[in-house]
Amino acid sequence: MTYTVNCSILLTELPLLERPAAAKAAGFDAVEFWWPFATSVPTDKETTEFETAIKDAGVQLTGLNFNAGNMPGGDRGLVSWKGRCSEFKDNIDVVAGIGERLGCKAFNALYGNRQDEFSPEEQDELAVKNLAAAAAGVARIGGTVLLEPVSGAPKYPLLTAEDALKVIARVKAESGAQNIKLLADFYHLAVNGDDVESVIENHAKDFGHIQIADNPGRGAPGTGTLPLGEWIARSRELGYDGYIGLEYKEPQETAFSWAIRQRANAN
Image 1 (spheres, rainbow, N blue to C red):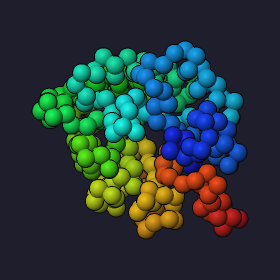
Image 2: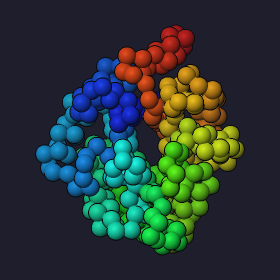
Image 3: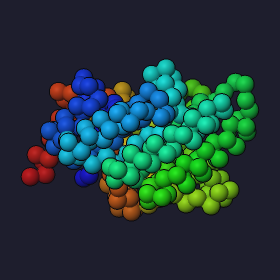
């Protein structure tokens, strides 16, 4: 199983730039991050330090979010956020540059919350334009834009796989972009009441990425009741051959105990 550690939600006891090395020490060769900077266009020093931390740790960066705003404050993306369009566009070049230098090909574009002062139609129109621009921006490095249903954000409009797939279909139809795919986060889909088994049966071969956490609690695999192993295995059977993103909450000392048990049982 090819796992990638989300170092924005795991290993948070450590400074961000020390987390890639900690993931490597725990036995993993790949990491992913939410947007690791405070602004859409960080300084050259900031990007260099981030890239150096990845390279020095000897891990592969497999996924990176576009800037999603102030996530702790409740923001969930700039894609549909009217008033921050130029900021998102500027972020595309930075994301593509980091991806090019580190060999990262997958880029998660969080859709953004609904704004009371604008209609959903206005925001959706902007989102399609921004997603098309993002797809064009990362296409030059062979990259793919990911679109994700999310739970726990009351004003975030993409709750099910079908919600995201409709947007993806519209972007493809209106722009011709083909490098935009569903990010299937099994935790978010399950919490939102989606039929995860059906989503896998119908779309696994077209998933751009899978992320996992157990429910309840968004903890490590085995702490809840979701059949994550079965869902991953079925996705593999149906053609998904990418990484499995570990995007759950667990203290550092026990963060990967389940994986150690899994490896021991396999020997």
